[in-house]
Amino acid sequence: MECKDIKKLLSPFVDDELRAYDAFTVAEHLEVCSACRREMEVLRRLDERLKTAGRAPVEGVEEFRAHLLALFSPWAWARRWRGVGAAAAVFLFLVVGRQLFSAPADPEVAAFSDALVAEMQQNMTRPFSLAWLDPQSMKDVLHQEGLAHLPNLGPVGFHLEGARVCYPLGQVFVQLVYRNQSEEVSLFVSRRWTRSLSGVSKHEGFTIVPLGIRAVFLVSKESLDNFVDVRQLAEEEVDALTT
Image (cartoon, rainbow, N blue to C red; front, side, top):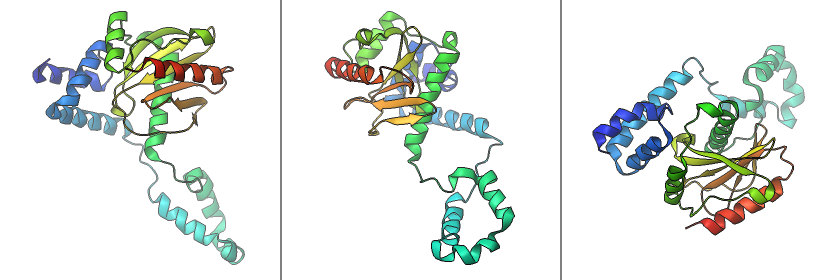
């Protein structure tokens, strides 16, 4: 496609309204065309502003945390407690909440976990609204992503339901959705994601595990009984099929 054709598709691309293979075609073009990529980013920022309008975050949290930690130090606690007052305590626990005393987390890791979980929840709640890849497109897309064939999770009881293109944090991923009788797991595959994430992350009832050296992530419910077996097989399959 030429730029003039791609630009007509940018708005539905940002809104996740394109057919799966068309979306992948746009994503491939954006990788090599800086002009279209800039235009897409403008549309995406506008979309984010509209979504977050009226939900301004609490500002000055870090400064307020430092001030309170100094205020509540062991040496100053006894003589300063009465000066804090009930109003400050109410503000602390009801308005600012746990932000104050939780250790600062890597915002990109947290955002990425949020994005993967959102894709899982969308598939669970609105599966028939998603644009699934047809078998030939799925094969072509996976080949471009560096996998020779579909990972087979049949030996641990999960069979492929379908594949689609999704965009956590604006990055193109292929989501492979597997199901057994009552549970669902997904593999998120991308050769574009370059951020190194390590270890198991638990978020909103889901477990997120990076597999091997590729940008492939296994996501499942924390309650999955045979998670260890699923993880081991998925990692072996991804390593064996990587081209």
